[in-house]
Length: 110
View 1 (tube, one colour):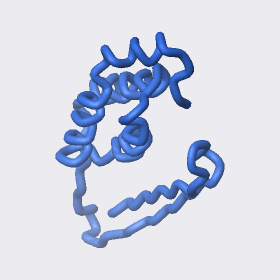
View 2 (cartoon, rainbow, N blue to C red):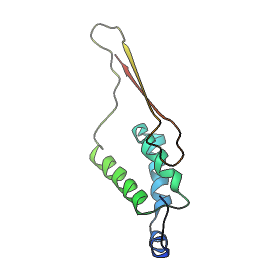
View 3 (cartoon, rainbow, N blue to C red):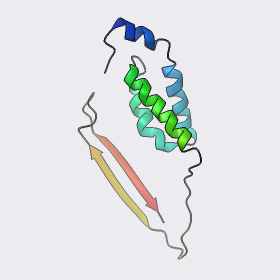
View 4 (cartoon, rainbow, N blue to C red):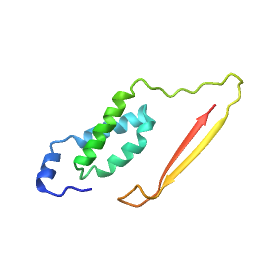
């Protein structure tokens, strides 16, 4: 997914792609770990982004705006016992650029 024409490359020079991705990284590290997969994908194209990559960044920013009031809360259940459920998923097909595996983990506590 690289730019094909000179016009596309010139139009992307006016877009603050690196600044937007840097802001997403800051949010991911400080308060939004749910953004880590999206930020990982868009940060791969910092040197040569195209319109598709910029659309993904804008979609991620809209996601943040829509989920601004969602919190991650850990509470003790009424019995007092903690139950931990673990789920793991991996995929070898979706990374079309480098053909590496993508792994995701979900842990539910209590």
